[in-house]
Image 1 (spheres, rainbow, N blue to C red):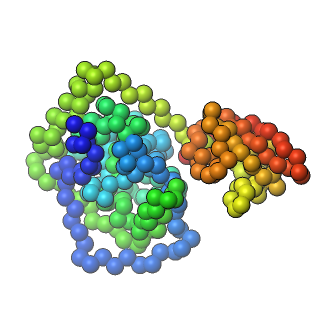
Image 2 (image 1 turned 45 degrees about the vertical axis):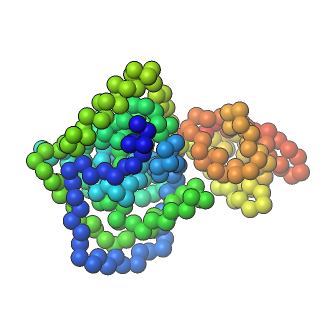
Image 3 (image 1 turned 30 degrees about the horizontal axis):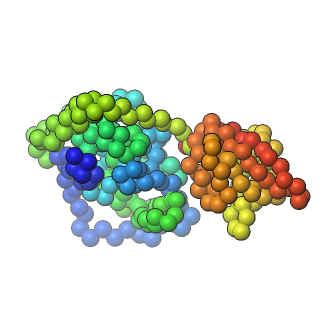
Amino acid sequence: MRCCLLGLLVLAGTAVVRADDPTPKKPDAETVHRIPYRLTDTKHIMVRLKLNGKGPFNFILDTGAPAVFVTKAVAKKIGLEEDKKGWGTFDKFAIEGGAKVEHAKGRVADLFQLDGMNSLGLAGVELHGVVGYNVLARYRITYDFTDDKLTFVPLEFDPPEPVALGKDNSQGSMDILGPAMKTIAGLMGVKPNFTVKGSGFLGAELDEGKTLAVKKVLKGTPAAAAGLEPGDVIESMLIGKKETTKAMLEALGKAGSGDKIKLVVTRSGEKKTLTVELGKGF
């Protein structure tokens, strides 16, 4: 049962028409985007999006999908108007980390793969859609699973639009799998509890070397309110009940808005304990 839900090869009645020998030009190095990501419990690459200024929403990057797919519930929430074939154009399409696509198109559909995983809570987080070829092809993407961010380099390449195949928007007989998974989840007593929380905002520039030092503190931010100062060296942080002394930047990046974090810092040879409540980031 679990295996049939892990592969996200999303065809859903569309195909990609490729351009002949696309030759993208070298982009400006200053436009490189560092995109935060996380691996779901099912080991899919998940990024966060804001659509039409609302979100964040959790989307899987899928090179096997010909286009962006968004659930019907999210489409309704963001006011995405779809045509008779189920396609809509986003007013704003932004990936956390700075990547933005003008006039991106998406297919409104409740994919059975996502429907099933959400019903059973397999991914550990609620999934709202898939980012496919018509967005991914605009970037040269570097995947490094030892890093907590992906590298997106914009290309001067406008991929051809996917075209619909078939007479309707269905996924054939596979349409039944999503509702089936919901029924099975109900019989098993599975009630996923997904909490959508925005990323946390500290408001300080940190420099990680042998130590984690504070380079700059922005005025009016959570870091300033907590009393963090330039020159402080962060020795450890307590997030919830978990204390971290290593990989602190990574731990901080996973914290959400409203999380309270205790920081032990060294300032002029003295140790101080500060508590910061993270603001709302992406």
